[in-house]
Length: 179
Image (cartoon, rainbow, N blue to C red; front, side, top):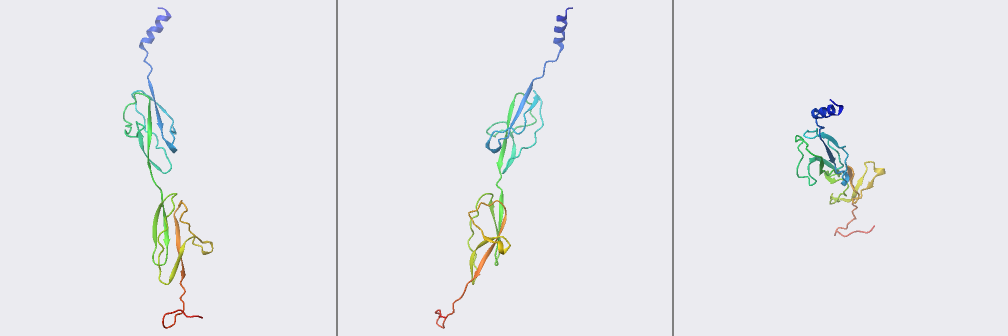
């Protein structure tokens, strides 16, 4: 038997090369199509383990999808038969911060979305006092009035600032007196 014929006989019994498929992950982070998870190679007809969930600021990961429209969730138990791209679905999660307001006749809390300014609440009223505003900082020497157009990026405490109203002296008829 010639060497050529022996090689051809071996070819008959050799297992065919297994076809492989590439699975790519499009995480769509920061509005861009980013592949932060490297592609994996899977033998055609095989399955693969779900990768760790990616992370995105102000969002919750909601799964891998087989289509760009994020309608068909991918089933990781299905065999891979061709190259595929999986797309990350994100749900926006708004972070809130608490604004604590303290004043003598009661306290209250308002929640504000991160990065948004706090709408100034109505001024509280206290008989015999004028409300001057809300100040920030619990060290009176370092206190300053809070600017309500400032974007809120953390929870903070504000205290009401009051000034006692002065009364003018009145005569018996209720008219102000001089001196």
